[in-house]
Length: 319
Image 1 (cartoon, rainbow, N blue to C red):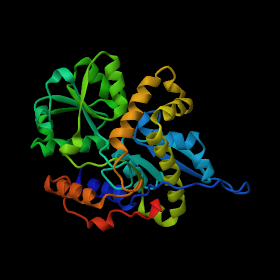
Image 2 (image 1 turned 120 degrees about the horizontal axis):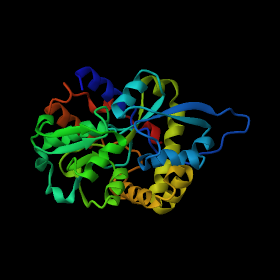
Image 3 (image 1 turned 180 degrees about the vertical axis):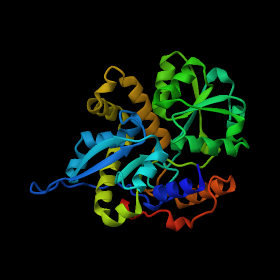
Image 4 (image 1 turned 60 degrees about the vertical axis):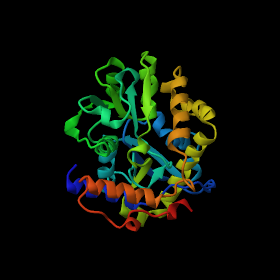
């Protein structure tokens, strides 16, 4: 990522603040025309990773907030950040190493084959590992994870394999593991391969999922952002409260998963236990964690200079 791209991405990922909160939504008056907005996903929207948004759509939370939400797909979180910044979409999904976030823990999971002998990030030296794309924020989280072990991109073979290949390479033995998300673990296991999830929070203070919003959108349409976020967090809270019921609802709204409910249930339970918990208030930015992350990125040369942390987020939208 160039210095200019890093600056653009950080502004988009961080300035919107913790635009996630949990609140009660009242249905719009029948005379109101729902506000049409487009939400840009970083990967195929059928993935369980996007359960909060799919549940908010399917259960009518967006409609109740007076929003008519349509979906589009970008080429990873970095691309989504650029598209939002360019005004091509008002809101988009990112893996956030930033404060507009779903959950209080890291999103990217280091998943390795059990027979690989890998126990920690340093063991990846000389190995092949997959990511969805070089434009996805999980790629940059992987670089941060490697840097925490004194490794660079040149010390490993990182393959950009797409949303299917990222796990297929692991299943077939073409790679020892992946920088992925819980969604991609069940298909590897279904191929008869045992895997191990290495907790990345212990090595690198990366962030959770998030919503990207430009400064201009936040300035011009703060209520739209607030309504969207509240509805999305209702979907997330549903998963946290009862991931099994959320699985049934998700499959009903995303029928591509019919017959594969077990994979969705596994993923949503992982999100409920490993990704979403940890916030004092749902959607609240952890400024200390954010500051540590930025210090890490500056120290490793991923960004050229730090920005005052209080300029990178706002907790206003969770209220």
